[in-house]
Image (cartoon, rainbow, N blue to C red; front, side, top):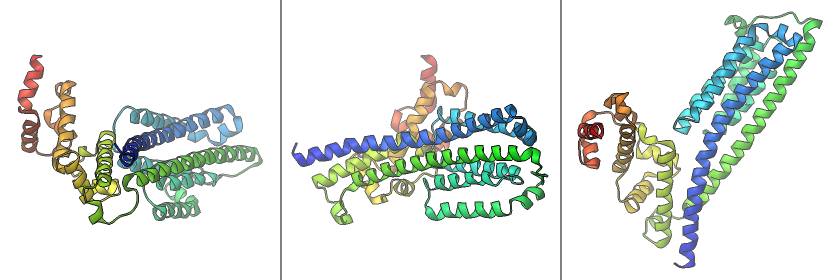
Length: 342
């Protein structure tokens, strides 16, 4: 193997590691944010009940702290045990946190605006899967809510004006201090992960196709392009194994090319040249593997076969039966009967 191919082989290995590092860090980020929020509410509750001034000020909010803490911690634990598509889950978590923060802000808006700092953290987090325009829109909407928070809170009967006396000034100052510190920690943490994830994405972009070239030159079967298609194929495999996008029945080659920041022509070429498969065959292979894994783990004894194959991405039983027999050589019923006899 000449020096040029050795360099490409090293890039292939580096790319595989980088791509898995990217998904590993994305999952870690999502779980850690949930745990941080959950433990922050636990800490807030402990501080509140241990301080007489705060306890009197936030008397009606203690149950909210407990429920929030348990909910976010439970969701973080749940994500560590199940597989999920990062972008879809991230959007769900982000919307959940936004609505939760909105309620939290309206709950406290009559004596503190510092809680609206949380929206800055949400805006930064939005950048991970969107762009600056969307993040700025989130921040703009949050600012508008902040400006009209008190009439909104009163109209929705979430909170009402309070008389700030000398007795609770100290409590309000403590509450704002805790909120500001917590907000800065979250903003710093999200900022750190944003920089780290974007750095990994840039590294992947450099490893993916290297120097720019025309589509016609890229499709020529040179040693350079063959190695690059191997890299792209490896990226597709890693994405399928980590994210399981095939479980979406509407998953398409265009969706895959958009996610991997390439085009469908390159995807098809990589699958055909390296994997010797068309896109639909490649997708169905992973769906059948998912079904086989569930059947081998005896899940058909707890769930219907329809539940198992729809969870894997199939929508029609006739299609599932045909594809299953093409890959396995027997029908699903025959396969299950064989498992039951063992």
